[in-house]
Length: 258
Ligand SMILES: [Zn+2]
Ligand SMILES: [Zn+2]
Ligand SMILES: [Zn+2]
Image 1: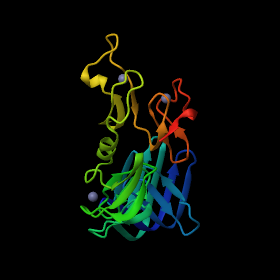
Image 2: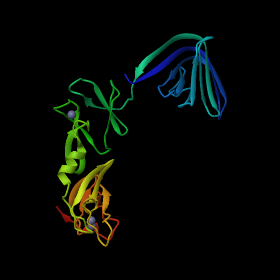
Image 3: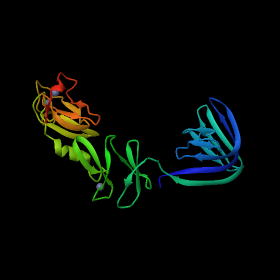
Image 4: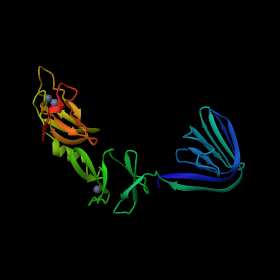
């Protein structure tokens, strides 16, 4: 289990000092999240009566009743319990859009920001924003397959360590295009993200004593054609045509469909 949420229920006085000082007394539920964010909820409405998000310090003192004190710069939230009904700690996870389960373990998977998270183990799998999680599962590990558009449409395992989208792109497109500057092959390399780099940089060929500097990030989208300069033209998810040469003099509206 990844995270724990602490819950305190009882009658208390909550004092907030900061942008607006405010004191509230009532029977409430106070939550302390794994990042130490403190929320005080009463029986009314949806918003907390007091809160402090990710405070720099948090202390919970049980010596004389229970007092929760959170501080962040000029802001301070102190919750003093006069009577405690219940205090407990529960496991917590991020909540995201359900995207299926691992077929090997049955554990639920959710999509949240830039990753898919296993709700039970907390394990995160980075996923690009355009990737689609499919209903089919990986035969090796049981995780769902994802469809990713990098040059072509690839269906690979959610877990890069199991099946690498980068390796699939490299084997599909390495040496496919020629450098518009020097004619050498363009190599696909992984350097953080995937990059396309003129091979003259690795084989030592130079023009006028300088290495050709052609290098760009491997674009997102699917290859739909070839520019007059020889570089590929990609169509992105939102239907735009992009080419790494667009900032140069090429007119990408005149590319040839592949
Ligand atoms: Zn797999
Ligand atoms: Zn070159
Ligand atoms: Zn071009």
